[in-house]
Structure formats: structure tokens, C-alpha cells
Image (tube, rainbow, N blue to C red; front, top):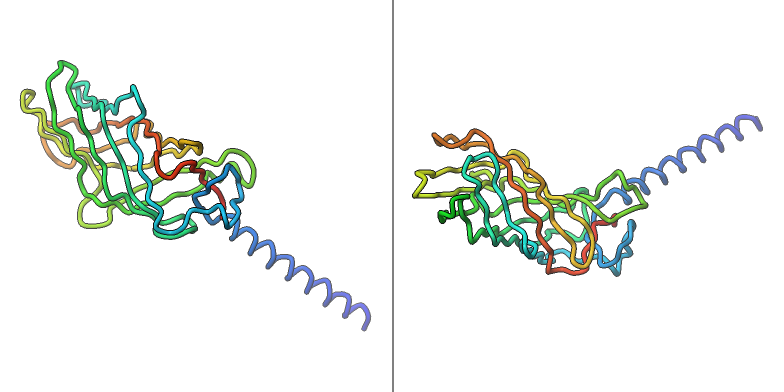
Length: 220
């Protein structure tokens, strides 16, 4: 009888421990935007739902579109949006605006760039490889929120180029800091069906986040 009681106690303890670990793991995996460089962000330091984020192209850098054959660059670009929750797995958000300005081809000819498919559904997620330690970094990923895919349209009339590209996987690296940075590292875009545009191009850019600042991607 004593052995049975001991066995029951051991099973109960194991189940309670399993439940605790499960709850802890679930809590740790929820992403939040944090005011401090902490892997696990205190409730008081978490940016609330509806927080606006704004970023602009890093000073003395350009947004580049490689693979089109024209050496396309833009000297100005901004990105803005807002979060839809305080924390989540992943943290839901939206990108409401993406602007591009000062765009030219390699030969110096002016081109017009615009974002397609706005607004975008978006998510923030902490980089899981850091776990509960290490840098407060993550990703900002975007996807279609309506009928059209996120993409880029450009027109260079003197080149006879009028092209639209869809992002194959729009994911930006978020490096925490004051300011934080958003990095597009050769993000692929595919031809939306227009000819004679190149089948695939890549976009690279680095943005400084002006609001909110400081900004870190942490667990909630």
C-alpha cells in the first residue's frame, strides 16, 4: 500500500513538473518589443499593443535592387506600421507604408519606384537560437493582407522598363538597439508576370528605427 502511495506521489509530481515546464516554455516563446536589452522583458518594459514603428534608410546608404540589369538604387526609403498586440507567438503587426525615393538606374536615369500590395500583414519573432540569453534580435516578416502580394513596382521610361515584382519571402533582420536596425539582406523578389523584366531580383537595404527607440526583440 505504501509503495502504491509513493508511486502515485511520484506520478503526480512528474505531471505537475511537466505542466510547469510547458507553461514556462509557452511563456518564454511569446515575442514582445522591449524598452530594455533583456532576453526576458519585464511587463513594465514591454511596448503596448498599437505601438507605432517608423524606420528610414540608414544615412549614406542606398536601397539596391540587383539582378534587373540596370543597377537600380534608391537614396531614400521609409517603412512604418504598428503592432496589434503587446506580445504573441509571433507578435502580430501590420506595415501600413513603404516609400521609395531618389531612385535611379546606373546610367543616372531617373526611375519611379512604388510599393505594391499595401498594407501588409506582419509579424515580429525573436531569434530562437539565442534562447533566454544573448542578443535581443529577431525578424520582421510581412505577407499579403488582401488580394495582392507585397511587392515593388518600378518604371524607367528611358529604358523601356515597367516591372512589378512580388516578394518571395519578405523578412527583415531586427537588430535591437538605440536605434534598432532593420536589415534586408538580398531579399528575393519574383517577376509578377510582366515581360521582358528579369525573372528574379534581390533587394538590400538597412533602416534605422526612429520610433520606438530604444527597441529590442525579447520574450514576454
